[in-house]
Image (cartoon, rainbow, N blue to C red; front, top):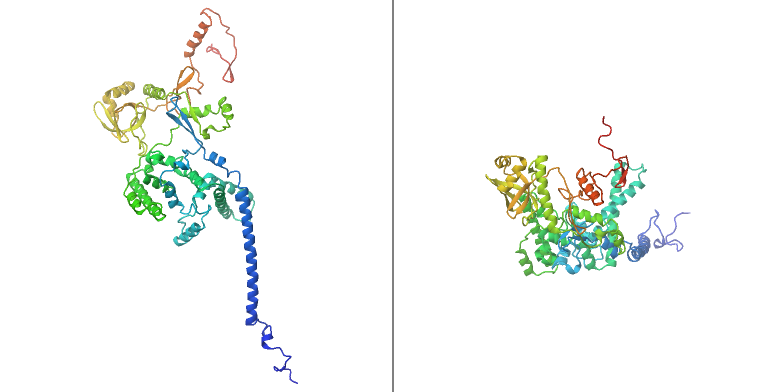
Length: 579
């Protein structure tokens, strides 16, 4: 009998009913059904995963961003971080001795003080979608990513103004450094990773952590504060030069103006310096060529922002063309007060009783960041006159006792830049431009002053020489330190080692205080404890006579000890130990 089945047998399975082919593989229809089932399952898993992810993200957002953003997301805390400065005034309540601040100097401004086009120029150049995103700009991230891939290098970033505000407010650098130390401590005993690779991995991990922390803080700022408030903080945070930060400092530094005096083009320029303030800074260049390049870069940057502002609808084509015809007129202004002994002495007094207790009653712990107006008893005119005559006398004594050189080290090109006028009884470095039989001509920035015959005779007498020999020893191009006697006349001074101090009081109040030749750091008038010498005998004898002593009174000459300035003093006669 044949083993083959009859295909016509009704009990034999039909080809379409066979779940698989003879080799065990799925048929076309069943394969499609199997794939369809698999896709449904994958889709279901994907939907569940996305739902969980969204739910988890929402819960995280509510917890970390909305409900518990952290103690640092508080307006009072942020204002303390911005460190409002305290201004120190002379007794006239008008002229400033200087400004007390922590480590960054900024003149805080509010959004109501923004000059025309500031917000428009800043957002057009730095963050076009600032008023529409939520702290992070996904479109900007994609744009930057594509641009960097096309360029083959990191060409641009995608940080929003809010992220930059968060970075500057909460010091991303310190966050990264702290995280790096934490990771180094955690993995210091890990021997599975090579040291060089471990260091690189830890550094990269800390940087990513810093970026994530910055992004989270940006989301927190956006949720809890208005766009205008964030823009106000940013406008007080960005770097300008030195320790100067913020829009008000920039206006003073670049154009020597108050905010209200800025021209639209000047405002737009400042908005364009965010990414490279050093590149566009014409004042920190050492040669005329570098200055010309910086000036050209500045105008090119302004031109770019004007185009962006027009495209964003902030200005018309007519306004753009009009602004393009204008030129930037840079004029370096002073936003920093020179560190002086007067300022340091004021800061020291604020740390001592009873001032500390008095301030504490008003909740002030750090006077430097409390936004105070501090009034001193110092007289501005007397202070300047005292210092002028003090230096002149020290010059005479130094030339007679120390014989220092008259010439000073060469002055950098930027040293005298920005001097508007030569102030009488102030001091400057000048370069000899010419010399004649009876005078010297000096160049100080764009100004000229003359050391006349009287001034030359003064120095010659101190040196014990003649005017002719004095002039012979000086050459065109030499640098001299001079004081201004009158608007066009100056006198040569020297910077010797001889020091001194001076304190002038009136009715118990300090009117003038000079702590030394430079009047900085060490206060010889108040802090120096040196032996007064025989000059003190006159004071002692005067006090004794007032108390009724006479020259014939006998004094106990036995050894004794005296307490002075927290320590015991054991005087001994000069002749003791001698035979």
